[in-house]
Length: 188
Image (tube, rainbow, N blue to C red):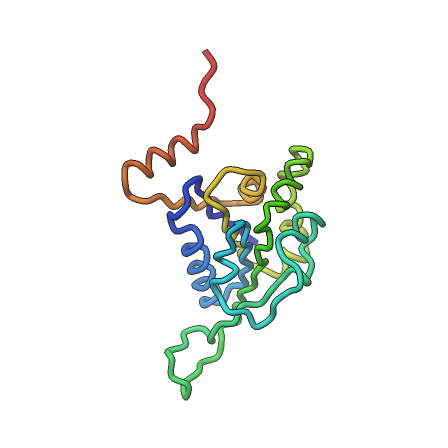
């Protein structure tokens, strides 16, 4: 299993769009994909219609440290390579697209994470995603994050095998991106 976190300190650069479309594309080519909406503004949660909505979401995953079936919603998608004609619906290539919904709008999850020890807080996504039940069920995990700095973003970065960092192609955004990477100044 491979984990990709889409992260940027700047909002509005296309993190959610990238995560949603990459997840759909990977599902269409037959991979088993889990999307995790780790943004307090649950845009990824609203991106796809759900054929099954789990009773819990990100808060339960983070607080329990376990990715249980009651946190996993199932996205409703047409079969892979569907051309829109009802009389020619092809068989799916076997891919799935599941979602852990964001349910953290009130900020209580970030507050809860801030009271944890640093190592524990960083491992809140990493450990559940490395569990054999998860690694055997999914080929790819895509984590969408908020355009900010915080404990949830740190945990998402720590869980990643690869980071995708979209940046708007303008000088102001590029400078903000560099400033976000270099948050500490060297000591003289």
